[in-house]
Length: 463
Image (tube, rainbow, N blue to C red; front, side):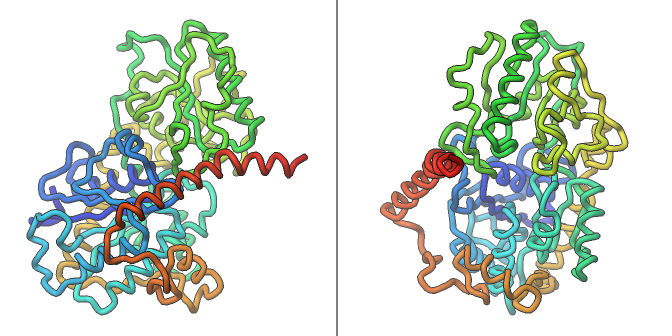
């Protein structure tokens, strides 16, 4: 059900496959009376992929499985220019139309890293300065917030709604905003939008007991640490030949996700003598969890997906419990365990109170987790259609952060006033074939440099 009796038009701007998944599913959650399911009637979704090192490939988008009515790759300036063209119009009644992509947006979801959110917020504030109406702007986080809490939050301030994935996060977010004197009313408690699937029912399974290690692109970073985890996973497969042991990978070589992966496990496993019950798998995490009996990870959001389904979940302590690994976020969960313990047959039992505070809602309350956010967005959308939304006012301005904000804006070719800098990519025309070819070659060269050249240079520096 849309937020009103008119078609609800939503634009999602994302900078990676994971954030596209979060942003597009969040958009659907915000305009439905129940979560999940197919696209509701009266809902139009336009996808925009922010051009950069992690721009998802067609294969990654297919794996996410979320369909948009349109999809295009853009720079921040191109996105702002397009929104300006279709949204900043005098005829505010044109939202009745369902024509593809040329009517004003009701909602914009910014599924981006914090600096990009801040730049686009300032760009939108400039685009809609003095306009009779503007879209509702929503942002949030794709997973567990375990680092740069203040930095990331203040870069997201200015959005109408800042979604928190749990009760704990909502409390922390409000504390940060109120602590610096910023308006905290935009913080709304919700949950991760991609939780779902059938509850764990081991008695109904006909497949072998399956252990899945959910790999992460950048955690841990060091080769020795990643090699240790891989060797222990292979050893577990040898110790338990009756089990199926899967290494769930996020991306294929040459693809990037939200974080850079310099040492992919595909590369580390070459030459290893692996037992027949060990193998690498790709695909949608939900489908992998359908056959999982034990989910093992360092700190992946996949742990929350598994806990939501009551699947036994282990957060590894082999490399310590450290902020750099993100597994400190699971202190008190009851899920911390080492490979030695797992080899011996240990199956962690999560703490119910901890799980409840993390928005996992394994007891069925997840279906109501988006009610507050849906109601808030519905109210704001109606106000927006009446031209009653206040201007976008981020906490960071040229007065509050004159030594920080200009650099953030400049990274997206925006000046201190959020206007496009001289020489910035044109925002009023689609790139031609030559420009597209150059962009593709440049992105390929960048990825090659990150995955091949940079590690070599670092190793040489350590000699």
